[in-house]
Length: 416
Ligand code: ARG
Ligand code: ZN
Image (cartoon, rainbow, N blue to C red):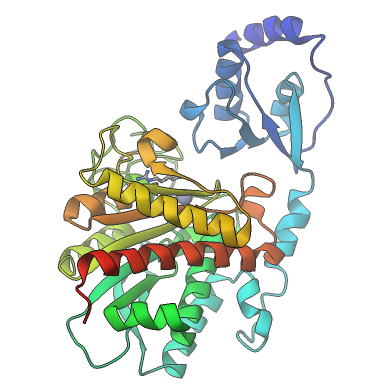
């Protein structure tokens, strides 16, 4: 009722500015609230009526003058049509079709294999084949299992005889709907075992651990049931809502402002830190390898950002300037070689407070080089980035990883 009243007020305010037109449920709209009242209304709309929020991740982050990307349900459309909005996508069903097409049952046979999205089964198969084809450099490490008991396999890429090398950790697919992320981990692995000069240099100094899908249950669910699923698939005792946001489940100012203790929220922090088997597995692995892992990377989408700690507080990290310079250099490389713009900075100040993230937790564990990458795009396609964009999205992220890894080696390892 209150929402309706606000709506009526807004309708009158906006009558001359905005033209009310119809939108359909397979559309994604970009709406920018101009006033605090509109912010409240948008928050209301996106908490109710089965609206799917794409950006920001949860209604409490909605602010004036910051575009909100959402897919309104039939009922919410009558609300949305009262705002000035822009249609980002008007064929989400087609876009999903495009993303899931060609997921061949005979993986790796074609050269475009890495320019497609792959089902969970395909990725497991790919992990297997990769280790079989490169037994001297790629090993599989089982780090744990998911809530639904799927294995969490990481690849260990390692060359040469040296046993006590330092290491890079990279995980993908913590959030289920961010499909470009697992695609990146596969792209990355391919380029590492194929090697070029820089990569040979990196691998001569460091081993690389790659976890292609940290949230396999959620990822599976995005292929079978709900393309826009974000969290894992765990059930809680006191709610019918499913799933914990794994990137709010780590022990870094856990469940403070920027996370939610409500199981129905997209940013639900879980019952306690590391309550989820997926985050616990990664945390256990890093705890037991904390003396070797020097660089922690976690891959998300979308918004094109290179973030570093902290996200769980507005305080600056102890080596803030060092991280800033590294992120800046990486962003410059992306601009120079791929003509694309990435924002960079500490997470809390660059986007929003988001406690319980893996990057901050790894940083506090002692991994002083810790980054979250948000890959393409900026909302044109959002989570539905077409397969034809995979190669550029991955190559630009790859150059950023390379730039940062080379710097880490330079800073931490004396020339041999
Ligand atoms: N979009 C990401 C999230 O909401 C941002 C991650 C930044 N790092 C963090 N620790 N929150 O999870
Ligand atoms: Zn994410």
